[in-house]
Amino acid sequence: MKEANPAGADGERAAVGFLLAFARAQHAYGTAVHLLEEQCAVLAARLGVRAQFLATPTSIMVSVGPPDAERIHMIRTDPGEQDLGRLTEVHAVAGRVLAGALTPDAGAAQLAAIERQPPRYGPALTTLAFGCSSLAAARFLGGNVREMTAATAIGLVIGLLAALAQRRPALGRTFEPLAGCVAAALATAAAAGLGPMSVYVATLAGIIILIPGFAITVGMTELSSRHWVAGTARLSGAFVTFVSIAIGVAIGSRVMAALLGAPHTLDPEPLPPWTEALALPVASLSFMVLLKAHARDGPWILAAGAVALAGGRLGAFVLGPELGVFVGSLIVGLASSAYAVMLRRPGAVTRVPGILLLVPGSIGFRSLTSLLDRQVLPGVETAFRMILMATALAAGLLIANVISPAQIADRRRRPR
Image (cartoon, rainbow, N blue to C red):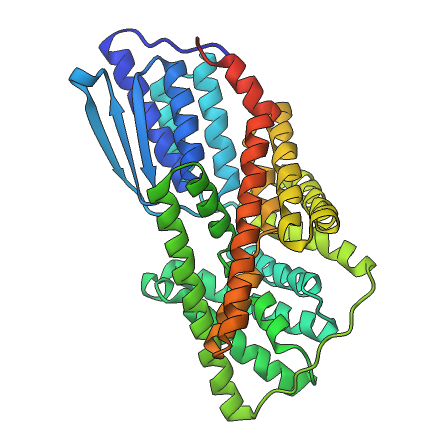
């Protein structure tokens, strides 16, 4: 891949315009701050633009030019959701610009066209993916047939609420506590209708896709990368989401218990191990839809999920459950870097779904529910366990980034 060398003022203006559009697109489609700054710096160097970047979860600042003649560009953004399909297309456009197949102006126009694209998957398929992800989560959490049935129904209802929240901003601002309230109410009602079951497993599995465990992992990674403002802001946002969901769950469960009586809870009997093998492709394909990845990446996402689970189990056997996720995240990070080098696509396509199977979101949720039930000591112990696991996940990703083939190849391509 050769370097682009814009000539003259018009060439520099076009290169800067493409650089700003690339940074905005990266942020909008869910790239973490430390990766965004690194990738934009590499792109600027290859475009021949002298630039510095400062990103937060809600803004990007770009300074262009020498110190005595700097121009500051301020981009105000909203925290972007993961859109792996568009992220892949953005990287493909950047590659064509650097190869000389597109001018920077044409590349910026293509980035704008990508932003105007309709959603990759319709509301019906997305709602189904919510239900399927809850089904798989119930199995991974140790649920039986009753818990899996209730979780699937809850996931479908949450998917419908999510589709409605996208159309009504007012509902979107209260979506998480409302979803928690609805999930707990439906799980309590299911225990009354289906028979004794684990209300906790059904509730958690029904809202598992909303639990911000991945945001906590990204926040810890940003803090470890010395991006203090971004990491603190992301962790604060994840904490608020956790609390709002937990409060919604507490309200929903207590209202339904007052109406129907206390639910008959029962620890589920474990299902055969082969059912977990069936749950893995269900979860992976659900993530493909919910993360808006290309269908062609479905097999790779499934492979990433299998690698994550196998690595996590191996790590738990060697290091224990808290530190075992380090091994899983390290293996996922290395495999994702190899995927990026071989196919010239963003490593996030496989890294994000793989890490989602390892994040300690369920542990954080258990901590908050314990605190709401005035079980302070178990709640604090569980919260510390969640922080330890999130730190281990971040450490695995950071080490994988240092020793990955993609990082080594990128250092070799950088101009000296």
